[in-house]
Amino acid sequence: MAWYYGTYSCGHDGKINLVGPTKDRQQKADWHFSGLCPDCYRKKQEEDREAADIEAEKKSEEMELPRLIGTEKQRKWANQLRLKVISSLNSNCEKIEQKLKERGLDVLPGEGIGMKEIIDSVQYFIRVHTDAKDWIDSRDEPANLKDAVNEYRKHLEEIAHYDVIEEINRTEESMIVSPECDFSKNGVVKLRFKDGFLDVEYVKDSAFIEIVKNLGYRWSGTVWKKEITEYTGDIEDRADELGYRLLNAGFTVQFPDAESKEKAVSAAFTPENDKWIKFNSKTGQLTLVWTKRNDTIYENAKKLPGAKWKDGAMRVSMEFYREIEDFSVMMGFCISQMARRKIEEYKEKEQSFEKVLTKTAESANT
Image (cartoon, rainbow, N blue to C red; front, side, top):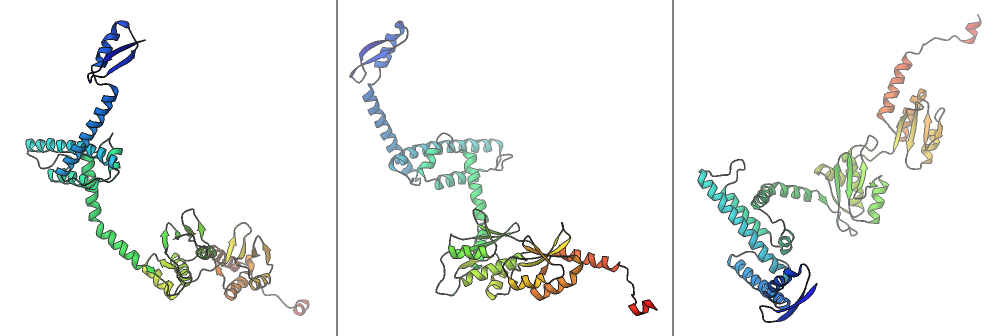
């Protein structure tokens, strides 16, 4: 290792510490001092960058390119990167045009790309990419002609479906109902039918949460959900009932469809029944279940033959199905499909019981 002194091409003196074989060091030193000193080199780089920035800005204006969005430094660098990409795209366009002319074709075989679509694609690509950051972030993998064509085709496809999307948006807006009251809430509660669930979306609000919780909805982490089963009733009725309660509480509601909206507004829905007669497959008994405390129901259910309270339900033997059916009518209980099927099966079994005519005690003794 040794220090070598010399004069740079800019006239400034300097030194360099070199390592390696001694016989090569002087040659390396001469090569080093043939250039500019570090300070002049940095200055020249800054001047070159500034000149390139000015040139890129001037050329961009001449080409009438869209002004890029970003900081001054970002725009200057992105201008140069964009011009390089445009130059590459135009070069590829010329090659494809030449290839089509040579083969006497209008479009590229297997790709269906013609010159008009290519030119339109490039123009669209340049017009829509106005964020300086995008050009800088993609500098290592700049867009090619195929990328530009694919992006343009996607744009055309979106335009083609624009009317459909607008129709959907108009339909959704027509499903929104606001209550006429002085205590209306801001925002819109959105009701959606999805995969056997009724989804409800709204901002965090204590009054809203109280309503959906009371109706058996559960928080999924993103929306409130209610699974629709035999015991909840029809999904339309559940949407109608929830919408009706929300409207009366001052909420604006977007319904899933026109029928739900009309039935909620007119209260023409079937309320959810939380009182059910089910079949317990383990015990073979009928069970009476209800969610809200009701002493009247409990006292009447307790009077059923052999009734026993266990695990939050009243259990009754199948042989007393007649009493159960009468009870369901009197107390407003629904009978599940399984319970109804088991009752019918028992009725058939009951028909096979041997029937006899018994005598009175007096006739039996004569």
